[in-house]
Image (cartoon, rainbow over all chains, first blue to last red; front, side):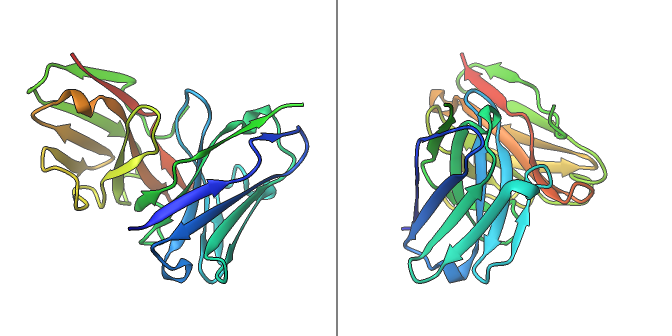
Length: 119
Length: 110
């Protein structure tokens, strides 16, 4: 059973860096691509980007200048960093397994973690 | 404003059929596969349909997907109260070079 679990601070101050980790169990990080998606409260889904086991990345152009994704195969987890956050970055952040590497076949999702940007 | 257009809401009675449309363009739906996700209240999205019309194991055959030109449609038959959720279409946009989601459709089973 593949399981993903996001973790990180629930509160980040404006202009600081949001850092999240997604721990993967039941599957190897080396087998797939891994995506991050976010959902502002009461709103729709926004794709942030994906990272492959080899560290190749593809980011949403609207966030590219502020996003970094990485993998740690020794810990079997993926990480997301988003710099210079504002209130507009307040959202539930999800990680998901991307089995085809296309970004559109996200077959396992974490439960999500709410990150609030506020001073 | 989403690049993919979905109706904000649809409703139907239990046992009935409903369709949810997703309208795009030649740079997204017109040339790429479409996926559909179901998001039950307070939970993470779940992959419902991939590659336009394929069902992952676990998706009941009451759910179907189709694509024609620059539009895609999710169909649900034999509606159940447990189907009440938000539904999102998703595809790749070759011009934006990004994954895009529709704005979501809230299904109410009356």
